[in-house]
Image (cartoon, rainbow, N blue to C red; front, top):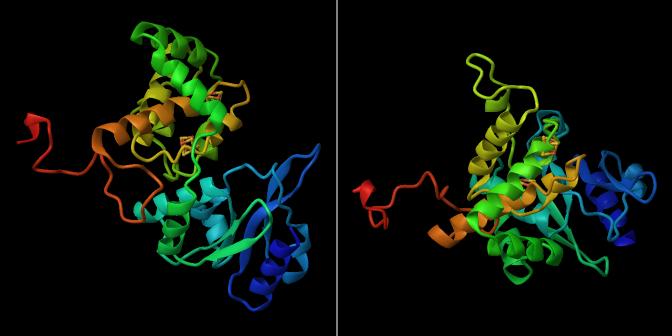
Length: 267
Ligand code: SF4
Ligand code: SF4
């Protein structure tokens, strides 16, 4: 933790970055995001095993961009998000300084997307063991059982959109869900509308979800919604051989044309 504070203080004092996005102590042991803009405030930063939230969603917010060049305290989920945002041209290759913090507190500066890519090649991270187990359980169910599982889960959705707000890859300024001319998806929470929202979202995240689990953690009613987007992501990986958050140069699998595509309709 001290190494992180010292590094943040140094970067801010020397003007190398104008804000450090990191974690600070919240209530009841929870770690919450903080935006450190002066060397003196670096003392607020904390780093421990409770720092699990994916901070990368802030990198594309206009109000944060206004601060100037950011450094971001990064676990592997943040690093994968950063790479995917570069791949989707939402960030320049060297727009963000990532501060990767190892379990022993050692801080590694990653100034470019290439440096992040090299770091992740050795230590990729990914789904937690518990989530992997749940995914495998769902995969073993029959199609009808999976359908029943998701219908029951999605019926509980209150359409608060916390899943969308917390996702680093949901960065559109104006979401289809908010369009009312025409109204694509109805606003109230009901079984059909909920299913429409989550199907659309999962399709938009297929090939783009970095499997951070943040949307599931954000859900106030405990729907494991990340399993749906992670499942869609893994289907794209299986079918097209590419994985979100692994490379800074990555075509969107569902939007790229390849003459050698295995489906004949494309020729
Ligand atoms: S796990 Fe959820 S929050 Fe994380 S990238 Fe995928 S859809 Fe977004
Ligand atoms: S966070 Fe949960 S309740 Fe809110 S919209 Fe997403 S799935 Fe529904």
